[in-house]
Image (cartoon, rainbow, N blue to C red; front, side):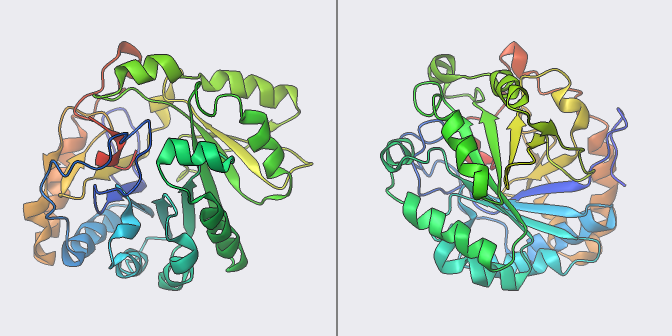
Length: 324
């Protein structure tokens, strides 16, 4: 089992397969994708060797991210590669949903077990203003199709922004009355290129937590492979609410994931200063022992916190670099 010097165990790999994104979200890529890095992304063979190594070290969950991972035509093959590894019980996908309705059946057939879709507003005009695309109706249709296909773990991600969707929290909660999804409110995070936007738009998740408790929502007990969200349920609602509050106390104490970029760099934290290039160890299955030794060694350098509270953003210029 992968473990750091603080005793945190890592069951969860977040794997970016591209940093390209076709949306222009105000909080991430307001000017669109700039193509300012090499596009020599990990091959399916390299991904297979990587996931096999992590699985042998106790990883049970792989989340495929981007950029927008559905821009890769071999996404279904990558899902299947991950799911076929012994020990991997959960293969999740985080997507903006632009082609969800068209492809979700193919992804589920390949072995997808969980789906996260970014929906930063339930109002079509505001959704378009935030993302630069008029795709809300299509995305909601894709969610419904995913549910009809029997996918049990469906989550909606909404980044809270005071000047955009900051007043829509109750609308989201009401929407969950008859929707079997988990809606996760995510605090806007400061990155290398959004300081002014962050200052104008950051909303504390503690405000939402107070509202939920006042309305009778109750906390859900966390599973070992769960992400950092505090989740809540209500007996009168089909859906659940999650809060991701990276500026909250002890947020990093429950860290259980490592990240690998689309270029084969290991990131010990979303906000680490730089990635560690491990791509040379992904070329052949025989290199698994060498990579295993390196991973154990690198984890001894994992910091106890991301230090976001002090304004430290590390090398993360925008969230599309690593999929958040």
